[in-house]
Length: 255
Image 1 (cartoon, rainbow, N blue to C red):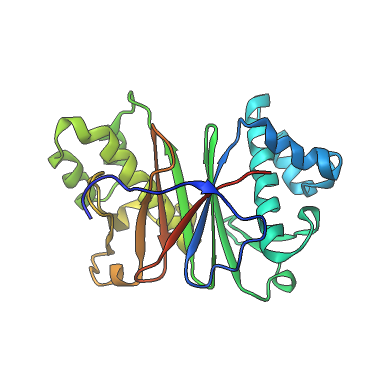
Image 2: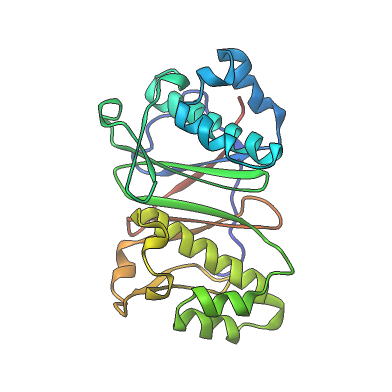
């Protein structure tokens, strides 16, 4: 429908039911020191995150980035523990060739699917069952070189749609398109290995989003649901799920 997406963000349940007929989106404020309570409750950070997660955190140059990454992974573990009934430090991940994390098969008889995105101090964690899904959040920067970047990364159709927008919508249109494209790539598990120019999403930031075509095939969009998420001011975010339509529940994570 036209207009900005409307979501009611409320504190999520401590023991959420498996999302059989919906997708749960959890919003996490990474600069909230309450997330440190997870480590304080369970012990040293090293007992919560796996060695590969600690190594990845250590590669960030700035302390703030290391903290935000560690808090995001701790939040993911805290959430998955609620759905699976496992302690956060017991959860094990496997990774696809593109680096997309998944739950270890022996811990996931329910076929729980999840995806994570964070930008600056905000993170979104999407959780569902069975269907491929992807989520993306982007901080809107007013000084972005929208047209220059769209020429490099958008499809011909998307570039034309962006140019057709009123000047006042160029920046938000760029970020709306970018978030929708990233969410789709994460849903299919390809990352940037799938050429950005070979599929198109809608660009207008205030019109219902959709997947318009893949390699010229306009029928594939019927398999996918694209949802804009109003996560925070000055951010654009989107969910993509391989299901024609879906119900989305939005929660704030409280540790």
